[in-house]
Length: 274
Image (cartoon, rainbow, N blue to C red; front, side, top):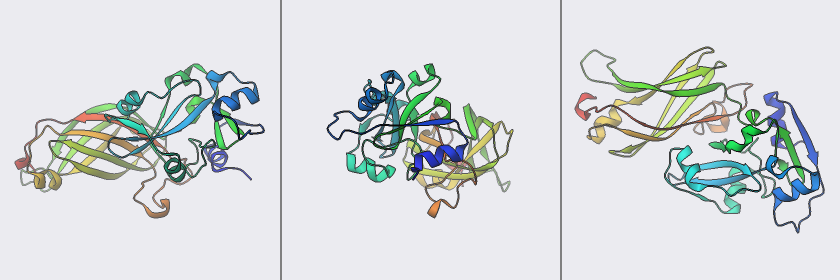
């Protein structure tokens, strides 16, 4: 019976190869065991680790089995300040896999994922296929197939919807390369001068070069604090964690998350919003 990781790879339409070996329960390192058992270069075998950022967000780090995870670099890549490994039981609950068989593909819920830069030097890498004793080989680019590629921030502006001279929304503009049509969900945190968790839903159109992340002006008005506003923990997703049963997922597309990093807006005043 195929694992969720194998099913996810098939659904994404990527080329892959499954490799199996007899797992030894006495093995001290699952990744290194796979490299030895399959006769692979250890630099091409990657382990999947589950960490938690200082914002309490869980994240996936995919690093070579011979390397140690740089927690500072992971946190910085995801717009955080600190990161730490989670307990094995927590990792298993979050991903739906047992330790030693945790795959970045087909997880119970999609988590922000960072792939070690060294993967770019290989035509294929090997990761867990979702079961101890099974690896899946595929191109690094196919691990996180996205229908939106984030290029950078293009600025921000206040939007007055009713013409009364006050901003109803603060809009952050993203430069993107949109490959497919489908729903897009933004998630971010205002970290300064006040704290708030933000969500916004929109729809991407194939060929679009810009997306707007819309922040409700009432959140700024209610806080009563002036900007600039520091945004962190920013992600684009096509499967919102706030949609029960994943009913908001883009049909026929693999789940993805895109890390946006940090952004600081212009010096808006709370009195400009309603």
